[in-house]
Image (tube, rainbow, N blue to C red):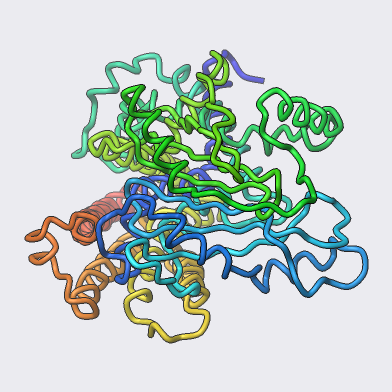
Length: 559
């Protein structure tokens, strides 16, 4: 089929990259934003613009809040098909969880409730609450955390939750990315020379290919490791053997493990009391300190609530290292007696924890976080230039043949590259414009994002008509201008609606909000530069075509 192995790799790289490159663009872009998802949350919800807080007192603050949490109406409605007979009217709590990070000023509380008459005895319904840990005040549930609840899940699930469809699509895209990386290395025999080659003054096809090679080679280790670690993180979804073919063995293993560790697997069915959880937390911190480990609590879990078999698990935040670590310490709920201190992980588990921590980046290192962002954006640039090179290489040939393949690829590329920027910045603008009292406010913000993205796609189809004639599409430059205007508007609206302008946030050193504003301004500046450059290239191409036309006619007349 192909003359040599390198040409077969070139075909594989081109068509596999094009097929799922649109998904990878979404994954890379929102993965980059997710590095600072908590900071984006603070920008989007002004009520949370205070410093991160340690885990508050469970006995004085969290216990009354947990006792007040009820299952959400959505959780109950979704569970109606999972019960035998009518839905119960009351639900007993079986698990409480409090979670925070070193970058999160608010505290997330989750409650799991038993589901009477459930077809699966382990099934349950859920409730949640987000609070200000300084005073215990609950935040409105319809306030969407743009970073951690929208951009971050979009990165790995595309918000296609039915049967984990989005996660499967992203997993397939990650596999294709690994193939594209390997085939790309095989294609480019002079890969190290291309690391230092960029000729922006050349024609579009040449300079775009240089930039594609440059961004691909510079961040090659980053791209490979993150595609691989992403697959590791969701290995349980892609290979769900513990809850399918091996489910009986899995259940037996859990029971044997409970016997070995001393952590009760089942409820006793006898009412029980809860001793001071604050005393258990203090003991856990003392034990961490004895091992010279940072002692802040990242997660607190009460299992088998109100039962004689209740136990409390205290997990260390572990933000001082890359590897994902919990170092859990477990106490008997009724007495506070130590049951178990998690041992060091095995070699295999340690490798998995490291790859997971490397991908999820729960650590505090700010420079490394920015390197993550640069690596993610280099992936975006590599994919975007790959799209443009594909179109530039084929559009004149397609124009002569009268086919529209290049135009459709160009329209999809516009929507996936500049369209994503337009949709994201439009969502930030909507976040500052929509009234706080608007019902289902988070749903409106999601609607603005989707509407702006669809509008960008429609605009791309409309304005990429010149591509079918072998010319440069004006849609790229026009959407760059739109993105620049929306980014600046978001910064100004943040100033107008909250009073937190850049001089104030920079002056007080409040970098979460200042950083988002500065990033928006930098994005606007880059979009303007890109729009002006695209305009110059379009004018140069038009002028060249005008100069070529008379010569072409003269040659034809002589013939």
